[in-house]
Length: 287
Image (cartoon, helix red, strand yellow):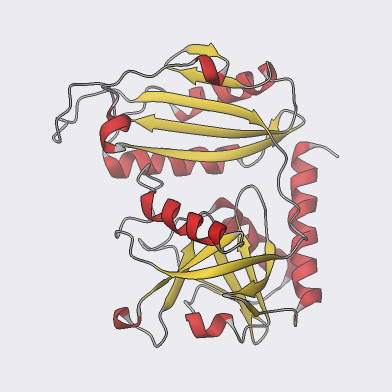
């Protein structure tokens, strides 16, 4: 198959799959999701992604239709049905199907959506550009919910500016001059400041990124100092390096923010980290 769509056991091309109008995802965005990649039909960090997906479901009180082990086995089977061995995998639980009512009662079994589309991970060595956007989202950013409208609006603003990503910061009245940097519209963000890799702690203001987790794991392995300490918007412009990370890009350097050049002063440390992340990807998925 050129791509694959799955909805509660039905498998077809994505364009042929339909969803009931009473699925609670359609009117409330009532659900959670995760996204991951495979290469050589081997899914990278599968257990870590499933842990995050099921944790999001638990935090929202959503009842998954299968166990983590069953989900893992299903995904490993589905990827083999797509012609291309490099795939972007999207998994979604919606709370269930019922007539529209804000209160859900807590007794539904989730609907399971899966899409598989051909696509490689992004070149992690190619520098990119960003803008900054005030973080006006809610206080459950640690849950990977379907409610992404602020992220969509920020991503479109970045696109209109000819940039790849939007970096969120909490306005100054919430704790720091110039605002605390949290994460990006669809990535985590990190900075090397005075030889230390800094990143926001995994509280309720950021998503616990799997690529972020791998970066910190490699820092420990390589002896690179790191600290889960927030930094400010102003720090972005004086940092030795600024990087964004996601499951589809590993660790991309940022060369420009809001039209101003940034980073480029800790290239050796950055490349050491990038090489370690790429090598781990190749070791797991096959060289």
